[in-house]
Image (cartoon, rainbow, N blue to C red):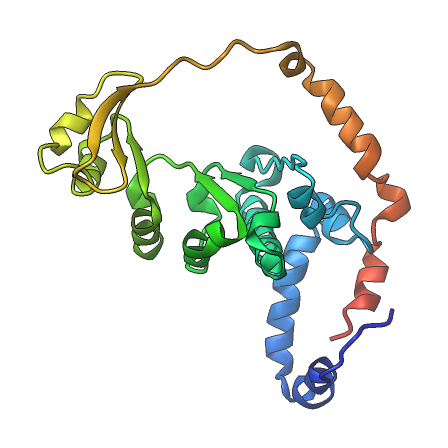
Length: 255
């Protein structure tokens, strides 16, 4: 494998810095790495020599990328690792579009469920800069205290339009301060189903609103298995053919 390293920084790391590392430090890193790669599913995915999909292509060509990170299937630790990797990859892919003129960028909508499991402090950069690259975020979680304070503050500070449904009294107290002075936490708690306090821009432009029910499913919504199989046929590889063996992994990581 040939790697381009025009500045020589990669070579300097392996030639000058790497030999100074303590064997104990390397061992700890290796144990953590193989605790993840030792799982057959994870090893088969992360151990591929080449990827079959391109997130940049998905962003620029209006494709849909779905990642199921069920803790019941993957386990909590691996689910969080995969989620963190995907969040970072999408962030870097969006930042790589900086060379394009803003008017030429295709909007990309990024939805994260159980957001608290995949976020870290670096996510505040996505929240503050994503709109410049037409990356639009929808994040979902149960209550505000699940999030680190720095992330919670970044969300509140970067939201211009608010749709506030009924919530717990604790979350209501945190949200009420962002709305009109006439709205209290009790008002938010008592909101009826499908009703919101809506803020457009500044707090003095807050009003009540009722939302509409979602549309009935169409025929396309009733064929999930066909869609999944078509995706697998295009992007998946058989495990025996493409997965890296344990011996190959040992050969590849020479500590």
